[in-house]
Length: 252
Image (tube, rainbow, N blue to C red; front, side):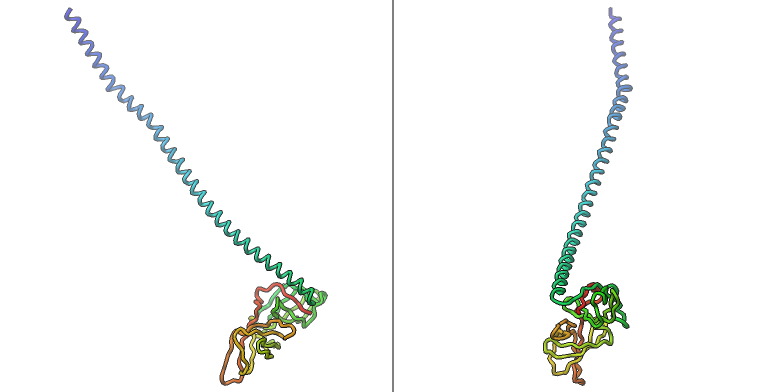
């Protein structure tokens, strides 16, 4: 009876040893493999999630950049709209002025088609001629400033010679003291004239063509006083920038 019991005990230990060996050698590597298998998708998911976050970050940055550009464009359009409104207002004012002039005076509006502003000729070609009622000698002005006189005409065009053209002389009046002067054109919108030393004249004094029309020829911008001469030399500047003017009026 004692031997079978010993055999059972031995067999029990043997089975326990096999189970322990199975757990150590088989199940442990399988557990590690299982953990590795399970962790791999998690790591991959982490990479995917990181990529998604990065894309959303880039998308957010792109949206912010787009919003900034839209704000800049909106500001530019607002400024452009304001400028356009100012231009429209100026055109409407000029159109109203033309209508008033045509009603109250015998005036012909004209457009400048070509200008020559070199040292030999200060002229402009206008789109109105003798068929429109333009004649040589007609005064040409813009607003209340004198520009020049019609030099010659054709059917539907005419040439105006600017009053400030070099070697051109024109009579004028110092508006303040009422002293008549002779202005000599020097080009680029300037004239030279002289007045007796006893005449009181200041910078900013206005020179007009005559009392009746009172078209402004220019304003005194410089006074040259040499004690050895009996005259004051005045530099007069036209209020008209002939480089940019595009519309004028012809007075009959």
